[in-house]
Length: 200
Image (cartoon, rainbow, N blue to C red; front, side):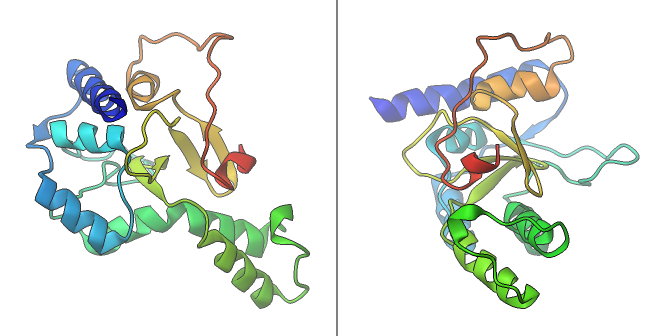
């Protein structure tokens, strides 16, 4: 079954992270908690992301100096609501920042309005139709899409979007395993997240 493969992939990602012994873990999210989170924030976890979080929640450690995120692991259970919303809004707000200050305009939105406020309003309206990007860790994201799995993890910083893992399990090595070597020519991720894929 397709969903079994997604569950296997998420469990493998959790196993890889646990093996590196960098973080302690709380009990994983329950079905009731997933339902509450998805309703509250208006998205659905992909199957592998859901399985990863069901296996155990990584606990944030005190940040090192200069770290962008003081709590890079989203604290889905009992975390600060405003912080979670900021992390969820990060991809869209980053694009809007580039629209406002760096002359970014996506050709699929049609002609850019001359008025800056109108341009932001147009961009915001179009971005509301793009897939919701769900934080995995800091500014690394997976698209929301219940029932799907195997999406590449994307690193998102305004309109600078790059691949940061073939999938969730590969991402754990790329982000956290210092022993991992450089990726080779066979490393060829392909995202299906509409709009976001065009920023890669």
